[in-house]
Image 1 (tube, rainbow, N blue to C red):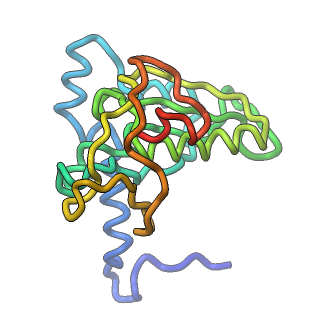
Image 2 (cartoon, rainbow, N blue to C red):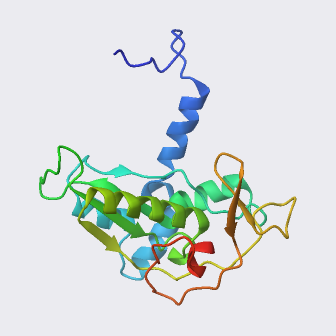
Length: 202
């Protein structure tokens, strides 16, 4: 099968492809120099640096990297895109030390990103975590988790038009039954794997 061209044959990049490339470029540390500088000032490394040093080059397949925090009632979407990449949870599959597993991923890797809202656990981050845990269980993947973070994120409205809403809009635009009224988890606590737990609803 021949791959689809990047343009319509006239040398111009399709706007949706250009937007995708711009969004993916904002995921890297180089897109957040101020946040990285603050991290360096404390003598810490970034989440993506830790993952890059852990996994084999070009083997990491990220899940849900384009997710952002569900805080549209407090911040503009563009600000969320720039300041909350991946909703603070970087996760996916990769290989370590050249290992092979069923001709696919050798392991799963997950890291909370302290540069995103102090590494707190958000709605879409929880969904990504739950999806990865399902994959880990089904494929019996070894898993590495960098669990630095600030615990559960405070409950807030998710849209400007409905500040009292306790329902979270899914990426597709349809409503979700996930409540935002769950209690906050203690700082540094491990994320529960079940979406029915209080922390999974923050």
